[in-house]
Picture (cartoon, rainbow, N blue to C red):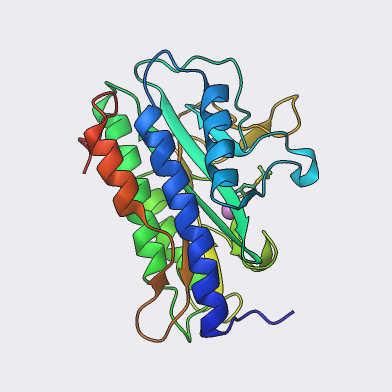
Amino acid sequence: MDLYKTDEEVELQRESCLLVSATITEVAKLLKPGITTLSLDEMAEAFIRDNNAIPSCKGYHGFPYSLCISVNEEVVHGFPGKRILKDGDIVTIDTVIYKNGFHGDHAYTFIIGETSKEILDLVRITKESLYIGIQKAVTGNRTGDIGYAIENYTAKQHGYGVVRDFVGHGVGREMHEDPQIPNYGFRGKGKKLVQNMVLAIEPMITMGSHKINILDDGWTVVSEDKSTAVHFEHNVCVKKGAPLILSDFTIIEIAEKQNINLNSSYY
Ligand code: MF3
Ligand code: CO
């Protein structure tokens, strides 16, 4: 399959990506201590379907929900459920939506209420590392340039764990397309990036070990040492000179700042 898209296809895909941003924004408005993660999933599924789109995760290789909700030591692919969110929880909302023949796939980590300076730093640096990686998504670079940039900032400069068993990826008519985008690597190595490739760039960073375990549900990925994990993801179109980010954190960030139950003091 071609790894690049036409400009028209990229514009269609942008709609899917923006609907993911809008969905995460709706979740951000509801996040507070006392709410169950299942109620967030139910709201999000209704919102997605009301927008004439399909929650791609639901039924994907048997995944039972529309959102992945990963709390504290959970890295990715957490199940929504009866769990009640509480002050101090670190909550990643990750979802994929199919519309117009294309998938959008992105993620954002929220802090409920008070947390430590160390965790505020972990969240900020993981988010910054996403943009540092994105800057490398330009024609002529290779996947290793993205991975190196993220690993260098998070692991080498700040001593965090870079999860290696899950990676970013191309995204388009399929949820997961080539090339893989590891959050580690070597400059100048890996697949060459070409104009109009759309990539899901998604650092998954822990306070401690990069090693992970998968829980008995067969899905939930946790840090092996139970240290807090953070995950931010954007969909990015490779361009010459400067990448084009298709997803949009600004609406999420407005909702985050307006929700008094969320802590955005890290940025
Ligand atoms: N964004 C996640 C990924 O790319 C979500 C996949 S949907 C799931 O792996 F069904 F696998 F959860
Ligand atoms: Co993804």
